[in-house]
Image 1: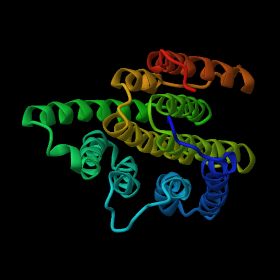
Image 2 (image 1 turned 180 degrees about the vertical axis):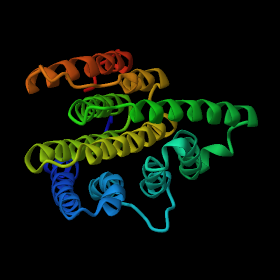
Image 3 (image 1 turned 60 degrees about the vertical axis):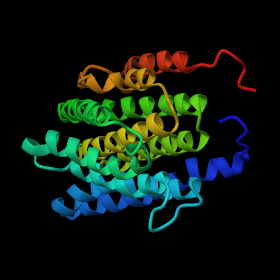
Length: 277
């Protein structure tokens, strides 16, 4: 973050404008698939949608993206698709499949680090992240509210972008923030064209998978505190439900307040003792 100089327009285009346009286009495509009763294509498109829209933003932020991948960030953009797709595995295999897919994918991203780690460190990290990923996907499978679950995710992603930006990396923070824009646009689009609850929950779950992947990158490469990251992920354990008697603004207010509290604690955890400027 320190010493990085980016113009407001250069920051706004990839973080807001590009993902917004991509999310609108792909969201409308998803709606057309649903409208024509093409359930199977919509099932997979709802998952890949979030990755495609995010890549639109990420390639504008990581302008030195190379194919074939050479840097860890290049691998992040490509390998992140695997755990996103793994969220659509059959439910009986989803927890283990998502954990293994996430670990194998991140092994590609973490290639430069693996050679410096001992066997015990690698084993400990693998077990820890498998448990973390398993709990996250299991908790997301229990979600029932296609209204509140995305709102909670958006709040979590925005606060994590602030935490990452304060801790070390503006570019990684931008990529994280663009993910919130994509999910936010899909959520708002759902208020207009009425996507199915199944599609919204699938998109939100895929967003969670991509977000966890970015958090792992932020921990290993941007030195973001693991304690702050764990605080940010706490709202994943909440099972959101809808009370028919609640108004829309009350549901949003309570969801934002509950999801924001751990994020505020995480920001306090990483806040520097000295001025940022």
